[in-house]
Amino acid sequence: MILRKIGRNEYKGYLEFANECIANRVYPMSIVTGTQDGDIYIDDKGCTLFWHYCGFAYISGNVSEDVLEEVYQKFFVPDTERRFVLITDSEHASNYYSGNNDLRIDERIEYTYGGIPEHRPILDDNYIVESITADNIGDIRGRITPSFSWKDSDTFLRNGFGCIARNKADGSFAAVAFSSAVSPEEVDIGVETAEAHRHHGLASYLAYRMCEEIIQQGRRPVWAHAETNAGSQKTALSVGFKPCRINTVIHK
Image (cartoon, rainbow, N blue to C red; front, top):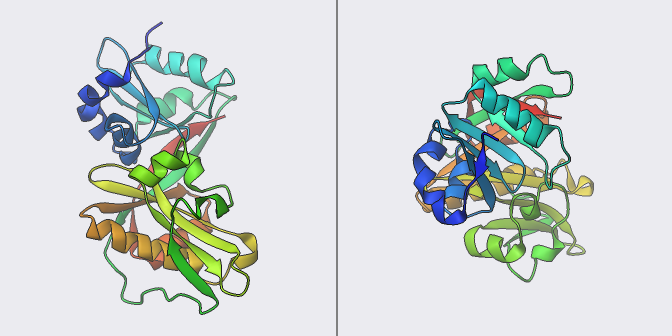
């Protein structure tokens, strides 16, 4: 066994390794700082693996082929308690797994924030927006919601934030934007729009609101998505994000 899981009392000692995860470092940073849940594995040669509650995994340091093989056997082969999706900018890791027919290798576009756009999104008059609170968090529906990356509602309400849109006519849930990952310097934004309320500009408006809030906090907004997700790309560009790199995603 090469990798060993460390205790939470040791997490802060791996801040430097988390910061080296250029591929969306906000997730490993959220683990190290104790803001969100996740596991950290290390070897004795300077390699660190961060596995976020949502399933995103990142690896930094001296990554040997022995470590990559153990990652495959330990996390990709078995049915783990949560999904395991390795996001990396390492050609070494990508090349190692490229010939494995059990795995899929995709691309993920990362963005940098270019500032509030000249033409700011406007809220459709048929909707109202409110902050996420203990009273309404249970109304949120969809796949990319706070429960995607936060272990429970209490932790999200304590360390995260977001807003939801409701239909004025019946008060039904329409869309959500929230802090999918939080670190001292960055916040990754997650957005979901209910199918019945799409094509009303809600994703762009809520994402824009989130960017404003993140900047007011003195942090940087973060955005990323699968290369094939044209809807997420459209939203990102509409609120001022600019593509900055493409990372590799390795998963079953």
